[in-house]
Image (cartoon, rainbow, N blue to C red; front, top):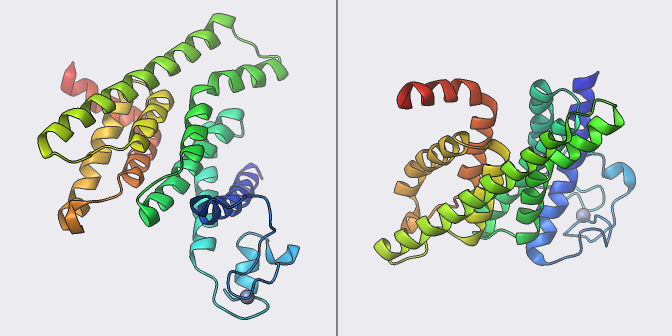
Length: 261
Ligand SMILES: [Zn+2]
């Protein structure tokens, strides 16, 4: 039942991500107007808005003009549901589960937007960073409500560590960007990559975040070799590196310790 709940919440959040992905790059309001068909402009009925199910029942076509609906919508909903489901295996149904799933959902939305537009909106990027930085405060609220409060200094030191790790990563990537720019005389790392690195630092901590950055760079090399102008959107690879390290942290840390012990 817990897992079904996690999956359904993920579908609902995925449905909202679709709205963000379509509207934010066009500077449209994310609440108004209500969902409508981009071709015939008909406002959708509530039962046309059920994640995944509506798309299946309508056989992927608009109910009014029968124009095919992009497969992107059900795919985004399904992948977001999978994110919420798999993270619930690791975290149980908890505040950690919800906030970490939200962070990965935002990274996923940023990845798709970067892939389509080669630029990502600061609003979503900073939301992910804020969630990652403030996770100890959410933990504090949860522990307070479940009367399982730890020593206050625990939350304090978690919070300080998050800000410190985020700052170190942001500064390192900023400096790295300057060095690379000197060498190849082109902007290599954008402001968006720096913000995401800070989110990664806060979420994963050291040295895991370094493994995630390496993983992202390794994954990005092959498509970069084949891409036009050797340009690939880097955000999807940063997100993927973060996800891999989040799930396989223990194994990867063992290898890391073998290498550096
Ligand atoms: Zn239509």
